[in-house]
Structures are given as C-alpha cells and as structure tokens.
Length: 212
Image 1: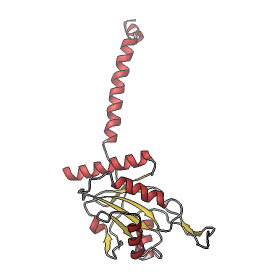
Image 2 (image 1 turned 45 degrees about the vertical axis):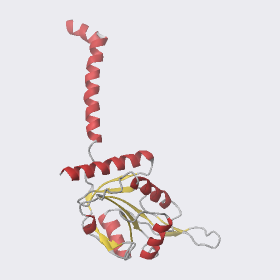
Image 3 (image 1 turned 90 degrees about the horizontal axis):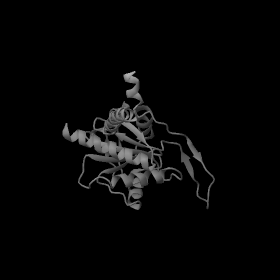
Image 4 (image 1 turned 120 degrees about the vertical axis):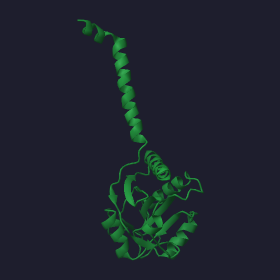
C-alpha cells in the first residue's frame, strides 16, 4: 500500500524520470564524442597527383583524410561534392597539417594530371593539403572497387548540348573519412547535418591522434 502511494506521487515519478533522462543523455553525449569505428582497412595503394607525382597511402600515413570520388567533366553530383569539400577545408586552420583532402577521378583516361591541375586552378582550390588523383584505370579501379569496396558505373552518354558531348559515370555521392591508419571510418552526406558530423568526427580523430 505504501509503495503504491509513492508511485502515485507525481513528484516521485518526475524524480525517477529525471534520473533516467540524465543517464540516457549522458550515454548519447558519450556516443557523440567518439569517432565512428573502422569499417574496413584500405591497405597500401599509390596513384598520381595533379603535379604528376606518386601519391598514396605512404604519403597519407598518420593523417586524417576526407576524400571524394569525382571527375572533372561531371555534370551531376561532382560540383556539389567539390563545394562541400571546400566548405569543410575552411573549417580547419591553415597550419593544421594533420588533415588531408583527396579527390579521386573515376575518369582517369580523360583526367590527366594536367587536366586536374587546370581544374584546381579554375576552382581556386588550395594545393597544400588537397590532392587530386588519377592514374592507370586498372590502379584506380583496384583502389576504389577492390580496396574501398565502392561502385564505379559504366560511362553513360547524355544528350549533347551546343555540340558538346556530355557523359556521366556513376559513383559515390558521399564523402569518405579515413583515419591515420588508412582505415575507412564512414561515409557522410553533403547535407548540412552530414558535413557537420564529418567535421566533428575528423576533428575527434585528429585529437585522438595528437593525444596518443
């Protein structure tokens, strides 16, 4: 009888609800301060950057990487991917050398180093910690499809406009987060909430690496 009276008391109920909410909130907060766990280990790889130099896992060792797939003549999702990367790049101090940005072309036959260099110049992209990569088609597909487990579609020609032939190549429409060990940590959308989550996770990885 006494216990029944206690549980009917709204102040007692509010007290226990408050305690429960406190613990749940604490648990949620703890989840938010942890970077996502590794999805897979990408392993060793090497491609060619916009300067014509070899660039790959060796050069990225110990760095947190934000990466995307793209191609320079892409008429669909690539402009948004590049702009999202530029937006994220500005959130890291210029002297932070622990972060690296990568854009990997899925159209390596057309996107030579010279084409990538010109693209970066036209888009006013900083080259000190952002590399655009190309290489032999076999090596690109080996990295993206076999190691990263991501899809690259066949070239699909679109209706030409003003005599200019356009085509599309299906590929990932999200941004990748790769940790200091070369492990893929997650895929993030280019929506505001996705970019915010990616920025937070990248900065957490940098902090963890600094304090290790």
